[in-house]
Length: 252
Image (cartoon, rainbow, N blue to C red):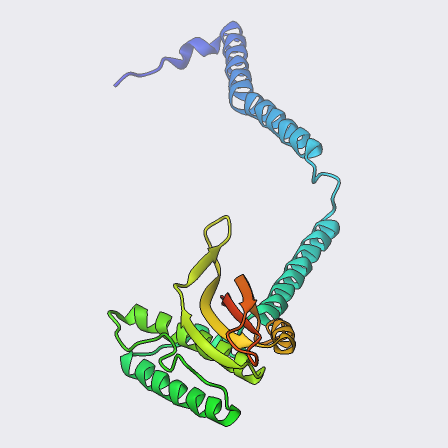
């Protein structure tokens, strides 16, 4: 073990040298471990203050920021409410929420198809309006569970349009059948709504044609015209024959 010889500190000169050396070491440690870190921290704080000062939010108080956030939330709620009103106004079905959550199997679809066919046949007999397409352009052949839901919604669109035309006292319903649905998405790929186009051909007079145009814009039974063609009808009573594709709209 090494033993320090403190006898050399007995002289005043040695003691002065030792004190000066201790002071130098202490000063070095103070500069190295205290002064320099504090100076670096001060420089970093100054840089952060400058960034905050130059920020576009620097002039905003906490209260004003909260007011801006509250205003943004209110605008978002207002837009959401407006979108809900648009959905309700433009949807072809009053029970849209029920149809969106519809879960059916093949048996459900076949039962609905049979009941709707029979109801429309009875309605056409009561109104004395020939219903030529008794099958409504729909069959019972289905390949998958997903097809069942699509076919059910197509059936609802056909039923809605058939009811609408019969209620407007057309002369004869010549043809009606659904086409493939069309999905609509926004620029981010999110689904917005689905069209269920229905092709229809019917004999009609001028007055019923006008009231028919009006009816498809009424709330709860909106149909969008994809195309329409009106030509001379086959008989005196059926002055016009209308061929058109109209789409029922179902919003998410």
